[in-house]
Image (cartoon, rainbow, N blue to C red; front, side):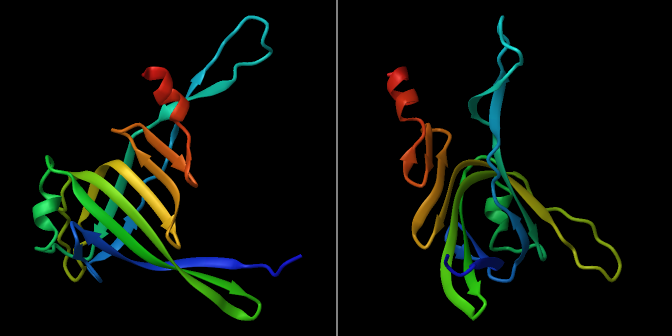
Length: 172
């Protein structure tokens, strides 16, 4: 039995349309895959199973440390999609300490659907938020794609395996 390896992610940098926003975002929520399920009812079945029917819409949210002129042209544009890249350090530890640091990279294409606003309060920092409607998402660990979803091209890959190959073939 091998040594227990623990992994941590504790920091990241965001790029919007190629511009580094190091230190300008407080938090980013990566897209979450939600599977659409349909209930199947049939005579003779003792229950009603839920069956996969596709993927639900994907969203991403960013909390900014302030209003930043570098991001405002993209964040206030609800028509043109933006390219986001989130880069993080995926550290791995054993009982002997850190054994590896790997790049974790998320690539996101989305359209800002909520532009940064915020609330001014005396003696408190403004924390404007943005949200994006995501059409493309890829998460890579050490350069290896873990998940890739492109909703406009019917792409859904898990560890390089095409989950929709037969579906696309059936549609012609």
